[in-house]
Each structure stands twice: as C-alpha cells, then as structure tokens.
Image 1: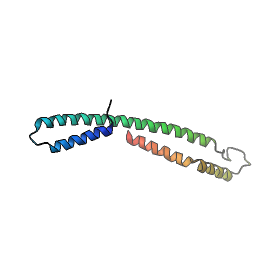
Image 2: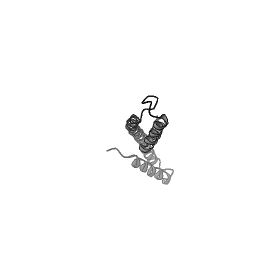
Image 3: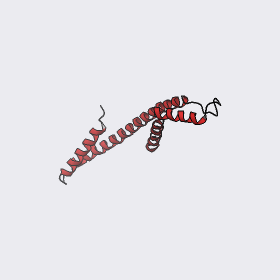
Image 4: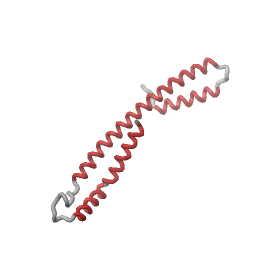
Length: 124
C-alpha cells in the first residue's frame, strides 16, 4: 500500500533529525539515510502530482456542475422587453431579473466559477 503524503513527510522529518544526530564519521549510516531520503523525495513529488491531478478533476467537475446551474438559472429569467411583449416595461423586466439573480445567488455562482478558473490556470 502506498504511503500518504503526511507519512512521507513525517519520515523525511525523522531522517533529517537522524542525520543531524549522527556523528560525522558514520558514513555508512549517512549514506543509507540519504538514499532513503532521496527515495522519499521522489515519492513525495509523485504524490503531489497525483493530488494536483485529483484537485484539478474535482475543480473541473465543480465547474461543469455550476455552469449547468448558472445556465439553468439564466434560462429562467424573463426575456427583456426589447425581445418580448412590448406592453412589458423594460425597467420592470430588468428589476425582476435582478431580483431573480439575487434570490438564487447567480452572482455567487459566477464568482465561484471565476475562482475555479483562476485555480485551474494557476495549477497548470
């Protein structure tokens, strides 16, 4: 079973402590610890890459879901007066649409979508 990132980091910290405590003439022990340290650093790097891929997949899933919710909410808005019934005042339509957006949190959804895009861009 593959160790967790926390386990790898703990073992690296333990090795660091052991290296500091060893006498300078303990060449064989130092060599073994340095070899193990190198292996753990490679494992840590691999685990970090794996975690980053998982995080990116999670963000992409959230982005897709929130985009669908946003599109669904936008579809529920009233058509603007210029596109719809000429008897409906455009100011009234805009006010209703703003109330719909505020009530269902469309602004928060768009903000979260922008945060996800920023995180995905910074991670690649």
